[in-house]
Image (tube, rainbow, N blue to C red; front, side, top):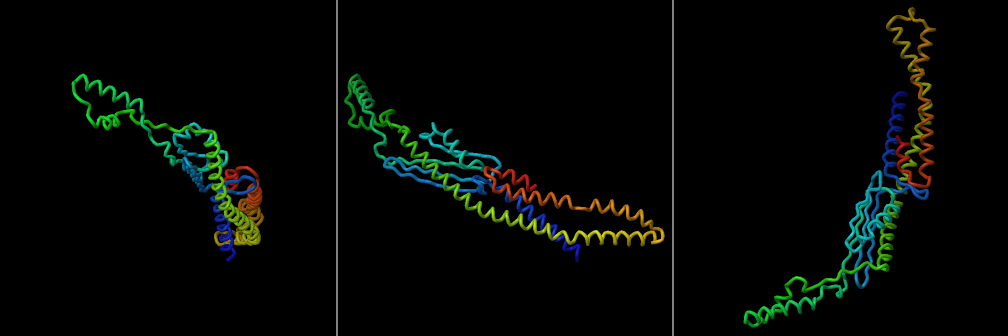
Amino acid sequence: MGSTNYETLYCGTQSSLIRAKSLSLIAHNTSSMIKSMTGYGKAILETPQKKITVEVKSLNSKQADLNAKVPWLYKEKEIEIRNIVTRRLERGKIDFYISFDIMDEELMPVINKSSVKNYYRQLSEVAEELGIKPENDALAIIMRLPEALKSEKPELTEEEWKNVAKLIGDALEKVDSYRIEEGKALEADLSGSVSRILGFLEDISPFETERITKVREKLTTTLKETIGSDNVDMNRFEQELIFYLEKLDINEEKVRLRKHCDYFSETMFVSGSNGKMLSFIAQ
């Protein structure tokens, strides 16, 4: 029964350690708080001219892996946008999207009067040279020609960029809040796993003495059954037994495991990104 209990405790300890390791791989820490790397945030800004949407998704990743989709209007700010996102989120596989819809009718295509007049003058000259009258639908033909309509692309103003930068910050704030909430659950789970490991560590101690006694009895019985009790040199047997039991001693492993648990608990609340350190300790 003692052996079975010992194995159960050992397996329980290993299971908790593996659980702690798997959770620490996705843990992220800033401002003395564990954060998950999983998050989602969306922010929308509507003005008389545009409707701007920013969406951010984040999953687990060892490094900051940013995939940004930025429309032509904000392309000049793409590097700055990337810096804002990576500084705030630090790690994770991040998908960043920004889009806009034009709401202002003034931005619709307009007639290029100079081109239309030039086209009409040339058609009239050709008609005169050919001795024919210009067609009544000449204007409809001209409007289908290149450059008859022109679209003026809006430029990014400093005021609009400030609004967009704030919108990006709002979306990232929502991602961060999501990470914090999930991080609280991770923190509770990790702390519980560490506590269970330390509890199992204490429960192992009573079985160590019993284990040594059982090993001694088993070896003694085997020797007597094999070569007979009269042929056993008990002094030599005790010497060999000491060497054998030293190899079975797990005190060093217990000390190391306790130290790692303490270090893991301390590291969870150290400021800065420490997911990699937690993963290393859990190994």
